[in-house]
Length: 236
Image (cartoon, rainbow, N blue to C red):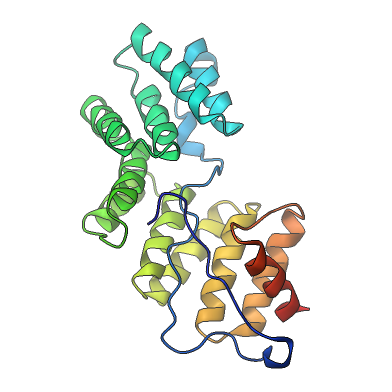
């Protein structure tokens, strides 16, 4: 998985709309590291989360990655044993492409709290970014995150991204469907599922999933604008 996950660019001319993708064309991994609400990230009672850690989470939710690193660092100074702060800083540093630092933070979180699902989720994200195309241990870490928290929708989505990159389209589709089952109002999961269905040649179902995602978030922007516009043309 690349540092900033890339979406497949559909290049179909208007006269070729029935054609989805040439055989053998495989997309790069999709957006596995996006800002998607994750219930397991708030395992503790929000009222019991230190103010600095809460500020870190707030900055993550607003995609202020540098601010999140600073806030999480303060939270860690106050309580070095608060695993969630290490996990959140891992995520922020991954977004800043500070991958070695992110890796160290995730490993520290696992040492502090070895049963924390998100620690393995973010560790898998970092390992995928460190060596794009080399998914050794990545699927294992996502699986561990799911084993620890079967309701971790982000882990299902991100594992689906990895499986898609490995051309395991059935496995990816199963993971996207599970993510949608767990969090049915997250537009990203519908777009990811739509892409897999297109890759399987199931255009109508792909368009249906895409429309579901668009209905949930009309302002949702894909990484590649050309992909977005072409997808709309194909499904119109």
